[in-house]
Amino acid sequence: MDRLQWSLRDARNKLSTVVDASRKGSPQIVTKRGKPTVVVLSVEEYARLCPKPPPKDRRAFVKHLLAYPRDDGPFKLGRGRRKLGKAR
Image (cartoon, rainbow, N blue to C red; front, side, top):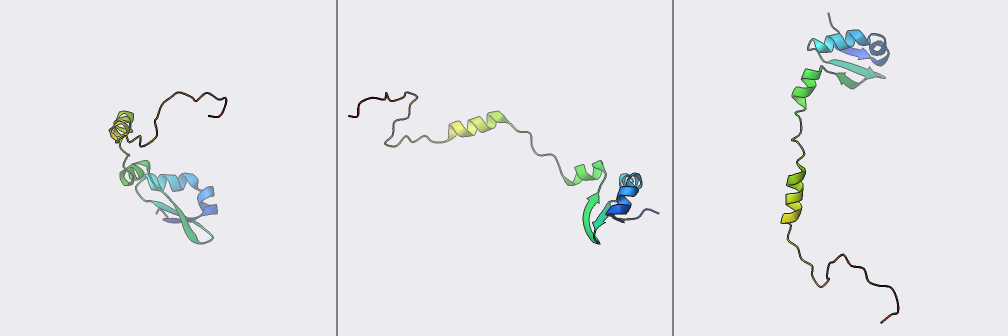
């Protein structure tokens, strides 16, 4: 019979048993000071609960930035630097 709940000390001492039980499809709860703290799940169960995020597409981000309306306002944007020297 697989236990469902383990104290942290017992889980540490019987880690292979905890892992085997979770791999068989029975999530294992680990408690700390009597309070449930973590759950040990199989990788398959974790993947089912947390689907992969969509792939990052850098081109879509660049396209988003380029589509943003540009408003220079009263300022002129450019790459040149003002020469330092006498005040006008």
